[in-house]
Length: 195
Image (cartoon, rainbow, N blue to C red; front, side, top):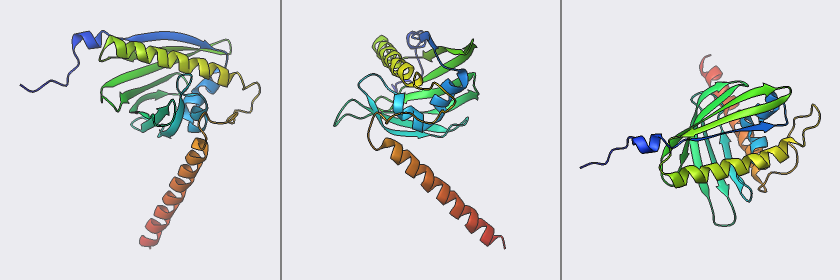
């Protein structure tokens, strides 16, 4: 008998929910999730760094990241943006590539007198252990996030400090440059062909 890919009732009941108050304006918190140049400076639990960070920040756009806690370790995650309501709500699918199991993360951002309350929800999980592991990862990562956004004391919201992994920010900038140049070449080829 073929095994079903559907989620069991027990898995659907496994939900990770928590909220965090960030001492940063909502627009700045939102920017941290939108821009890979920021994400490589905070994303991932303590002791981890992003080796790769691809973001196509639009509904239907895909994202893919690689977290590592040292040489020889690569934890790939990916997903698709499902809902983007700037700067209030962000929802995306989240897949660990090692098991292919899909969860959905939803974050609501609420302004609280210049600070930002984030309500976080992720479900379903394959097991209690997976839920609890994600809980540790996200909460530790948001501790790192707190330290990163504390550096923004004025209106200059450009990236601060070095990425948590050497070379990643430079790779992102180079990839964006290649994408812009490729689009420009495609546009030029189309306009030449239209003549």
